[in-house]
Length: 308
Ligand SMILES: [Zn+2]
Image 1 (cartoon, rainbow, N blue to C red):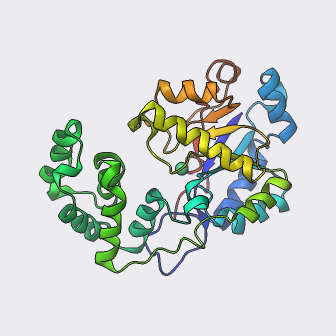
Image 2: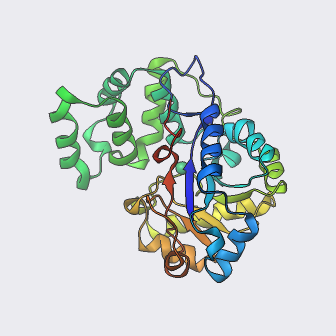
């Protein structure tokens, strides 16, 4: 059985010429490809696999997962799944619904989509000062950024500094400053799937899961803060009546993005299962012994899955 991870599935937008997304037509082609080659896991089969382990009938089949609750999941993905009688798991960060703002992780995507990577990197390097970087990261930051300026990478460097180097105490205001210096305005009202539409998708048989409150690298947070991220995000899903399975997905993904505290907390909060990013099939052993970091493939590892 293989889980597939998707983020943006949409159409080209003139206002975001450098935006990375999977074109919705290729999404359809990829679903055709999965249908022809692997088949899809039925929801009842997934329930059964979770309770009693894998059975032969689901071997090699596909489960679809969608991260971050972008509005394109309702606009493009949901109708396509409905048309094909398929279901998916949608992982939702809760803060946008509580504070009506776009998360930093997505504001970074929008800036990278709207401008040339080298331009925004230059702006960023003029704003970030070393007192915004935790001591433990300063050396690495110097090595990886200033000394490498000749062959800087633009977008990936921009993302690395904001996601990895700067302290979360400064990140929001740094992004505000970058956007302001470009006179770029974020539009929180249309970026995410609305609560009403999440409820519709849930009622139609899709599973809605937690993707934390504001999508931090959990391994950067104290245990207490990680606890709040997990608990508060499930409280939100409870409030809107969208918990069929108590499931969670690690923000960013990869083994560096969470730690033992995260796994402990998922266990003690009674979470049923959680997804990580790791390019391999889900095995019986995963469901039994490592259900809080189930592997998932990025969609770009399969035909038609490349970002435009
Ligand atoms: Zn995410």
